[in-house]
Length: 444
View (cartoon, rainbow, N blue to C red):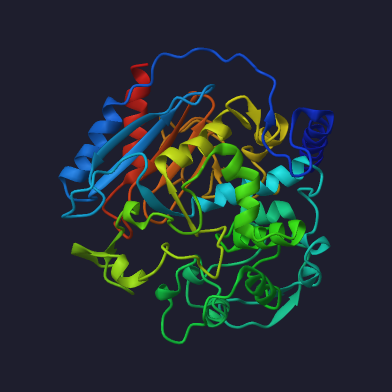
């Protein structure tokens, strides 16, 4: 597995060096035109019916879906409802949404662009760029204390991209390690108003990275998938590598070349920011009869520049913008005649990058910041998989407020779902969307 990945990496770097991909900071160069098969128009009857039903049942005030096919960027947008319960502003492709963990694939693709230029390597220790990570320790029993031993191996770029670095999340529990994360302000996002009494203030990205380097890991790197702040560390790595702030890195490498003018770490036009709702009482898992608007909790969250530029959960985007990113992924790195990521690197990014023998959710792989299906699950889901049915090699990820994106090269379509609802365990989003996409695909 490791040898194959290295060959793919060397091929990708060779392609970039030959001039067909990115060079230095010149992201978005003209791409060789490769003809793609013309597909029947994308059907969307079932997807429209799904989001209409969500709105009619009061699960969300509104939703927008973007459907894509390979080739030219001609998205089909499907909308329903309004941007807030009791409001009158319609949800549209230009409505802004908190995409939370859908920030992770964007951060990961920015890393892969630097892999394509040869500035980074997948199996390179991150300590080459961030020396504070050179002698990491691992908690002997993270459930009981912070006593530690030396890590068995260094954290690599691959580990950051696949959540196998050994870090944790403050939302993973309330053990000694998670308590230290909270004390130091190491949180899964950019909103300081979500902090609880006794938790530290949110640091900036470099201070967060330095604090993490001083804590033990929960696991030895490369031994298991554990959801974590690893993509936030990836953002700090890009800052260190480029000597730019992370928002400028993303603007130069992805948002500018893709024309994603409404995507960033805060909503430039707060009037277009959709309302987000919490369906559980704070600190519990009990479903409420009526959801709580998140705005009453987050105050200025996502409307002003945050101190922490969270590559793991801090972005705001629109369906129109995120569809451009999804199109680039579906087109294997190409967007409207320009190479954003060399094809070999783009294919590598959406392949299974997990260390040998390590799986996500029991049966899935993980690529650069997103899940990769290893089996065709359209006619039955393997044990341990919580995702809806899909073809092998489908790549994507979702966000805490119900947003979702996927690129399916086998069925040759991409999808972006935007809505805002948190803690609603009664809403089977993944299963519902998978079934609706399958019904629409049958009619193509």
